[in-house]
Every structure is written in C-alpha cells, then in structure tokens.
Length: 105
Image (cartoon, rainbow, N blue to C red; front, side):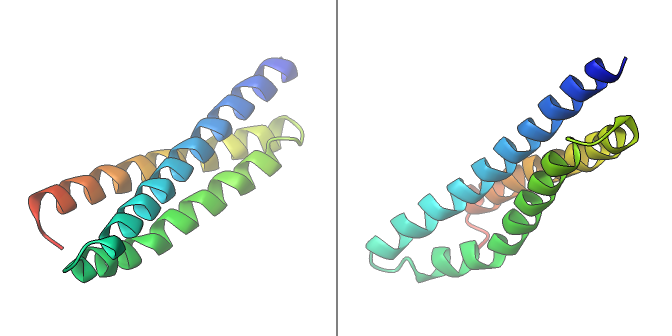
C-alpha cells in the first residue's frame, strides 16, 4: 500500500512541478519576445505582474516533491499540496494566455 501511495505522490508532484515550470517558461518567453520588439513594454509589465504566481506555484510544487519522500501521511499531504499547485498553475497559465491573446494587458 505504501509503495502505491509513494508512486502516486511522486507522479502528482512531478506533474505539478512541470505545470508550474511551463507557466514560468511561458512568461519568460513572452517577456523576452516583448523586450525585443518596439512597443512591447506593456507586455513586459504584464508578465512581471504574473511572475509571482508562477514562482509561488513552482515553489509549492517543489516543496510537495520534497515532502513526497516521507511516509504515507507525508505522501497524502504532498498529493494535496502538489495537486493544488498544479491546478493553480494550470489555471494561471490559461488566464495568462487568454488575457494576453485578448489584449487585456
């Protein structure tokens, strides 16, 4: 039973870290492209406002990944923490994409 919970905790937290890293990477690429074009300062400011959310979710995902190396109780907590961080980062990524593509920045 403990091995199954360990594997599930590892997978959930790994996916949370990947989702948060994807959001942070998207913001970094967007900011880099905006700096290179004239008139891109609004997009740079937009990405700066979104960067703390990406950093916090990435930090929570990494913390959950670290916690998942404990016992079963720690694994359950890591699953909850990692799941929340992953869902939060995916929602933030969707919000960032929709706001940027709609021109609300």
